[in-house]
Amino acid sequence: QVQLVESGGGLVQAGDSLRLSCATSERTFSWYSMGWFRQAPGKEREFVGAINWDGRSTDYADSVKGRFTISRDKDKNTVYLQMNSLNIEDTAVYYCAAGPADYMSFARSVSYLYWGQGTQVTVSS
Image (cartoon, rainbow, N blue to C red; front, side):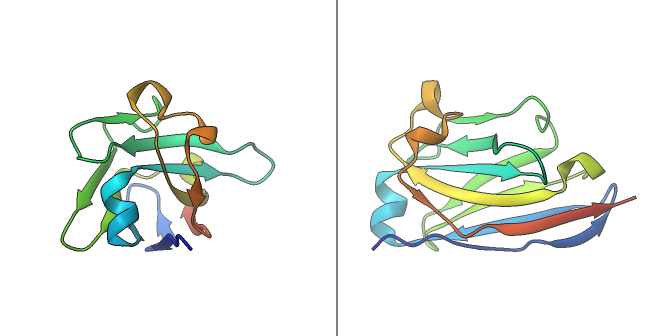
């Protein structure tokens, strides 16, 4: 069974930085693209960013471009979401996902087969 284990969420102030991690098995990490999505209270889940299986292609939602960065560490089978200049609108549960997505389908949640349990990020003013 494929598992995605997220960590790194928490309560921060506006302007702070936070790094989320998503650990998985070597097989999942090697085969699939990895995406990050988020869901705020009362809102639909939305795409944040994604990185393809070899790390050569990334894409981000307009709302986070220039502030968030996705990276992969193949030695640790872990994907990271570095979040800088956080604002209140970034408050949400963040989910890691894995699947056969490519650049054209990164933002579509149906492109992902496996999902993590989510980690809460709360940004205060």
